Length: 113
Image (cartoon, rainbow, N blue to C red; front, top):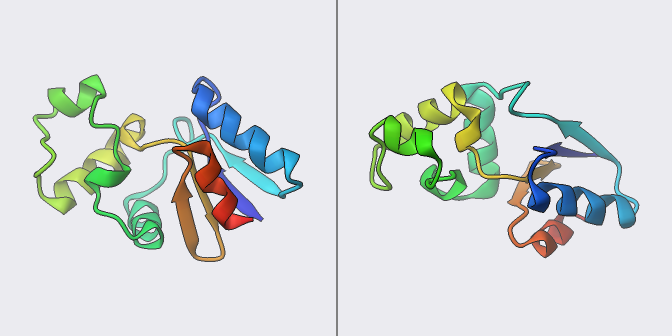
């Protein structure tokens, strides 16, 4: 089972979901903007991704600048911002068996299949 942090309004997120479904993957969608992940869940996914907090963020989002965040902000500050403002989480993210991948480019999702 792949857990898929999905935003149906995002073309990359829709394309990633289509790729997984075309390949026959069993996918559980999580509409993370409505069902925001907790700080602990974000930390767990960050560890599974093996990246810094800023690498899993949408730094171009308006709220990133409104919060006074920067690419060199403290990890805890960035993680807390994602928990409070899930729009800051890069999309899509697919999680399976303790591994995770950001679906940009879409083909990156194939590593979980």
